[in-house]
Image 1 (spheres, one colour):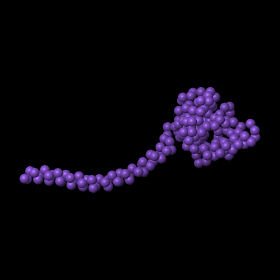
Image 2: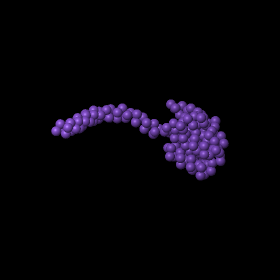
Image 3: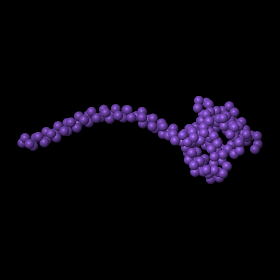
Image 4: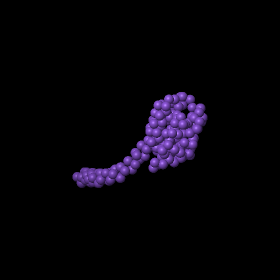
Length: 181
C-alpha cells in the first residue's frame, strides 16, 4: 500500500473515531463475502458501519481519541463495527453473532462524556435489549402528550354530559306526554 493511500485511510479512521459513540472489534475469520455483505447491509440499516482495519494504521488513528482503549486488541484479523447510536449496532451484532458462530466478539468501547468505557459481551447484550433512540423519543413524546389529551377529553366530557342529560330529560317528557293524553 502506498503512503498516500495509508494517509487517506488513517484520516478516514480518525474521522470515524471522532464521530462514533460506540465501537466493537470482531474477529472476522471464517466470515465469507456474503456474510460480510449481509452484516454491512444490516449495519447500514441501523445507521452504523463496519470496516476491516489494518491494525498498524488503526493504532495510529486511535491516538488522541476516546477509542484508545481498543489498541491492545488490535492483533490478527479485526473488523471494527461503529455507530453514533450504541443500541443499533449492538442489536445487529447480537443477532448476527447468534446466527454465525465462527465470528467472535473481541471487545467494544462506549464513549461517554468524551471518555471511552470498555464494553464486554454481556454489556452488548444489555445494549441490544434497550429500545432504539427513535423508539425512546416516541415513548417520551407519547408520555408528554398524555396529560394534554386527558385534559381535552375532560373538557369535552362536560358539554357531552350536559347533552346526554338534556336528551334523557327530553326522552322522559316524550314518555310522560303520551301517558298524560
